[in-house]
Length: 157
Image (cartoon, rainbow, N blue to C red; front, side, top):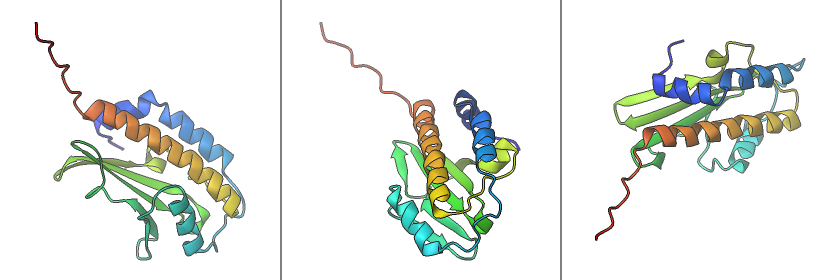
């Protein structure tokens, strides 16, 4: 999968692929929790701070942050979607520097391993916590890389 060079550099700096391999290895439960409540899962996502979470039944995804209106820094928007279909967690993140320039990636396609699974709400909570911690790190690094720093003010003599 071809990843935007800026995002690729950020992910490499965070050792994302190794992190995702470890996460996936630690969350391979059998059987996966397939009959969870979408409303309870949505409440859990909101509890993590994504107050505007909505569920799209057509795509079976939760939209946590919409990149169209979620400015995380001047000149940088971020979006986040999560699928829990079949008791398997997959995450899509999107960054945009303007309305026409978007870059993003699906966690499972970046790590090229089996998607992590959960068998109960406790495992889902733990898995989401680790996932959102990594997403927070990625967001922070994207801000560092994409948002120009203000030049220091020259002191008058």
